[in-house]
Image (tube, rainbow over all chains, first blue to last red; front, side, top):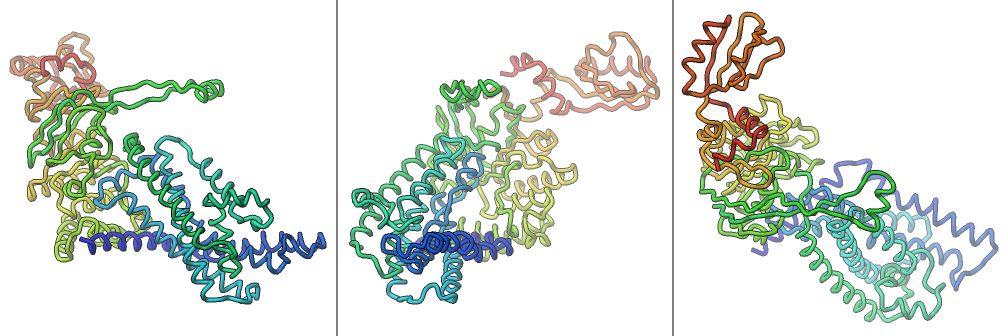
Length: 268
Length: 331
């Protein structure tokens, strides 16, 4: 029985890979895109800020440290925050989930297997980006234990990110458009997670409050773990994140059960 | 197999007046109307039956299909399919049914159909030997052996529909729900699909519930017809009795050697349908008057061809939709 379930998951992951690899140029652009974006946006921006303003340090970060922080934040974004639920919301709204309601494989399992497959490709992209940055000399010190610890934490963050994206996607049972919710979540999380600026730049009282939310663990914590500079309590980081995962997981279950009662399977 | 009692489904229909002011108003207050798509529906379908759900657009046929297959939740009433409550969507139930949606593809667009079939093999836990055997049989019957490795997006509509049917039949479902399986297909492709369904059903005695706008599908495949109008059942019986709703009539088609401009009311009682050049007319003639009418037509007009057959259900449907009061006698 368990092996039959496993076979369903594995077959779904494989078919998602096939689907994503069916457009070769698109895949190639996805893999090299992040490095190109880094040089055009982050590298140019931070170099300009430090050199043109004649600043040596911002909140303890010199240019080389800031670039390292930004590179790791790019890697974390690739590993942990790449997934979005655009298709899910669209599929619900257009009545395209009907087929998956008839197959003897749960919809959540189908979506999650798709996410795992997506993560596999994201890991390829992140590895290519990391090797590229290493080759260019931006990252001189790579410590394997930090790499493993940072990757493990990022993968858990990626699952939390997926859960939230799934929840936003399910809002399509009630809302005609869910992109506003998605943009709001991304904007807020970018601001409070340390994806734009390292969290040292924020006031202490705000950081104390944020510690109880999932936000600082989305970017700042894994980036600092990768850099080997995380000074906070790792167990608190893991526990807070896992607690939020349980909350969002339960919410997903509830929203799916309620939402499905409203599903009209439009267009069939 | 399928038992429903007092089944109903209501939908909320939001209303918005056109233009910017309408959008602004609906932003603060969305008014809606609750409409019954299906109302107080009773139905019983036995194993191995082939039943056609007939009705115009919006009659409630597809809503019924969605409820039968567990995709949507009924608002009221009782429904059991194969001993299961469809909306509970137990895996055991899902393994016994299949749904073909003519207007929605269930195959993955960007990959060959074979990849989708392999995925479905795992979902339905079909062992390798059975899978290969069924795949071979179905692809040979449908004549698509050479298209299995072609990307679905590159297939013609007819080929795609054949693949959709294959995808739904690989697990040998007990009930097959076919929602407009021939929509958009040319006549040859329609006939191929019809022939295949008939052959498959004869071989495996699968229960088939079909909705189609093409009466030829229903006539060729179904022994029983359920007519749905305004969300309620208006006729349920053998197809041969369907045309009797209009009384015992025959369908008479007469072709003339010249255009008929006869202004008399001779034709009026037979619901005449003339072609543009008025050289051909289709009539509904009561069986009791058939002999006398035929003689009168042959004597009075330059008849080149005269054919007579049972009333096609398309004609019956058109008459019923134009005059729903005719159904009162059938209920």
